Length: 227
Image (cartoon, rainbow, N blue to C red; front, side, top):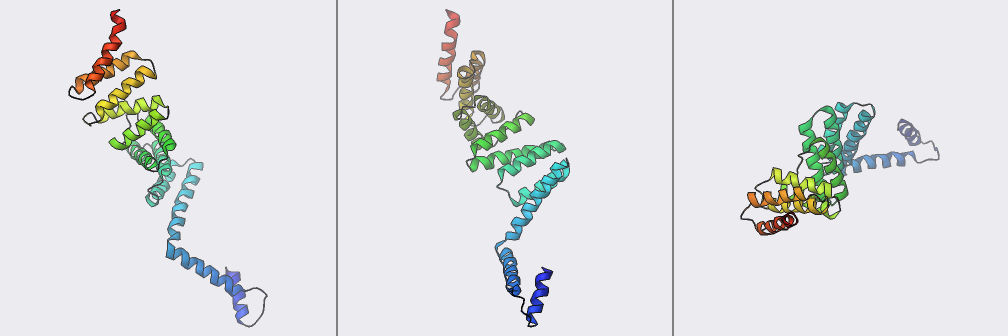
């Protein structure tokens, strides 16, 4: 930059150097003005946080990485993968409360952006650190139904069981028990656990519309034992 300025001053003195150095300076000034006007400097600052976080991770400095990633997600609140990465770092630093909150944000952001595969992977990661991990009710059910449709019965079953434990008074809690029972019976051939889920539905939600269906399933499961 200093060389460009020096040669521009030479040209202003009347010496021809064969290169339009003043044009270079004008273009540089325009670039600065455009970046300031359009907020590009914010993008650059955000990327700098992420770059520094990666440097800290390469050195094994999880606390430094956590600080930089916290700044990064503050500037990029809709980056679900960044929230998930922050959660993994927070586990390394012992910040379990922060990690759980970051995993929650990551899953719900990824779900909203229709990145279901990443959401399911992130949920699986969260379960390894927090076996009772749940999202807020509607996103959690959306995720659980999606995992069942995507032929991930183990994850779906865990999601249904956690939902029933965390939100026992939710209107869809009986249905999640029903889905859990069906998975136990059909995906894992575990009749005993399926029967237990049906019995829980009958006992906990006697007025629910699915109770008659649950009773019928329990009756069918008992028939072979009677013969």
